[in-house]
Image 1 (spheres, rainbow, N blue to C red):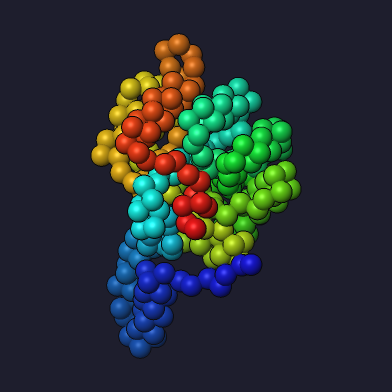
Image 2 (cartoon, rainbow, N blue to C red; image 1 turned 30 degrees about the horizontal axis):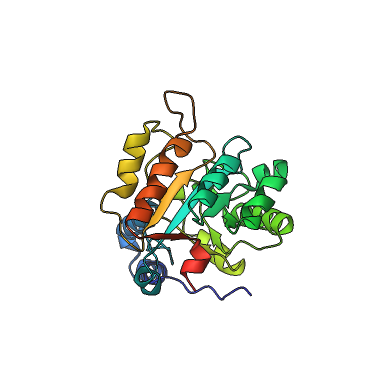
Length: 266
């Protein structure tokens, strides 16, 4: 059931600043340039916060698992931009072999192309989450209506295909604006970012991807990888396929348990 939107302290402060500056201009019209400058600075700060994927200034943002999950030595493996017919089934096989679970942030329009893969993700004990319908590079510029339409379309698609409504949302590249949180609250979705990101849509060297994911790796971390739009290794293989087996082995050796985001929050 949708939860009421509660503005973050930064949003409340911004609203208060707008009101105060408006009253100030009414009381002292000569100071309107100063008020305009203050408003511009306020909007610049909020815009910058939206361009920081791990920021919580605009609202709740899961960047690390809670204490209970840390005590259970859990980490969350999240895989974005699928489903991909050439890569995702092989990723599922690798996860099965390691008895590891993951959260797949799927793009709605790709899910409609490859619904069988989405069903297979769920059938193997993983979760399908919402990565938007269009995966537009301009998502952070969307207005509220367009943003809601995009997220809602993916939510309906993924729920219909898998029989499970996604619980988490991740924006394209994690970039957003202050309008996102009210939309997510109305759709009963939680924003999820990451602790570690290997930039594996650009980096095709499996060793570098592995090192970025495992440097100071600890329980509670949320790892980001890509089965869609993955960079290629020198052999022409999606880099996740080369880096994931070694990552899973490393997690096993460190006694870290890869789980879905929803399982970690129980």
